[in-house]
Amino acid sequence: EPEVTQTPSHQVTQMGQEVILRCVPISNHLYFYWYRQILGQKVEFLVSFYNNEISEKSEIFDDQFSVERPDGSNFTLKIRSTKLEDSAMYFCASSRMGSTNYGYTFGSGTRLTVV
Amino acid sequence: AQSVSQHNHHVILSEAASLELGCNYSYGGTVNLFWYVQYPGQHLQLLLKYFSGDPLVKGIKGFEAEFIKSKFSFNLRKPSVQWSDTAEYFCAVTPTSGTYKYIFGTGTRLKVLA
Picture 1 (cartoon, one colour):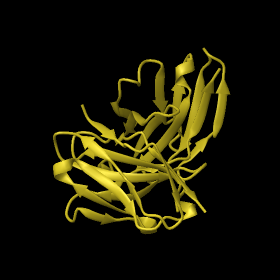
Picture 2 (cartoon, chains in turn green, cyan):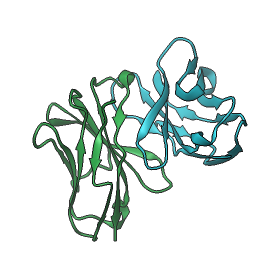
Picture 3 (cartoon, chains in turn purple, cyan):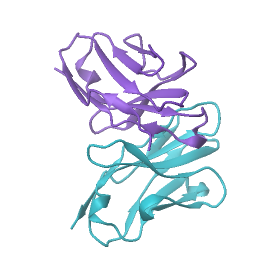
Picture 4 (cartoon, one colour):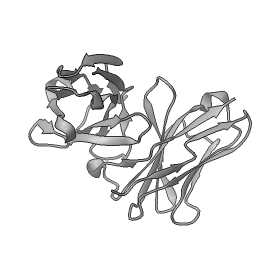
């Protein structure tokens, strides 16, 4: 069964540093997403991406965040100048169609710890 | 504002016990509804989904859920749990149009004792 792959599985970074979280979506999927889950809280939508541009983003997704599909296979989330409150599990997902009727395929997540 | 509530944060059951996890949502329009499961160290996996039609939907691994529109609820059930059902369960909704994003509940951590 095709999988969405996320690397690394766990990253520790110092406050103020930049991090890049990487995702390899399923190859024939066209829509890509990032979600995050702060420990003990709900999974929150960050951003959706289609046709090389952001199609929707939440109020969490401010100028500190950016997404990119640099090479046609990877889908990255960059967090500039990390803060303690950015510590969370970050999930990447992809879907073949844009409608949520089809559901997403999620990756296993990257646990980001900012110290 | 759209929201999803899962009232049980932690549930502990013995094997063979019946399970019901509550999920209520707040949204004025038509929604699609989902239950996802996350086994320890693994990704979120789709258990079942409801779009329209029969409000009782069956998913994988013996799970089912019932959509009660008047109560804005989509509770997950399983008649007899197994130790391997130990996981975190997330309810999610999305409007049928206008957005691709899911709105998740806070999750219910289920522990099944052998």
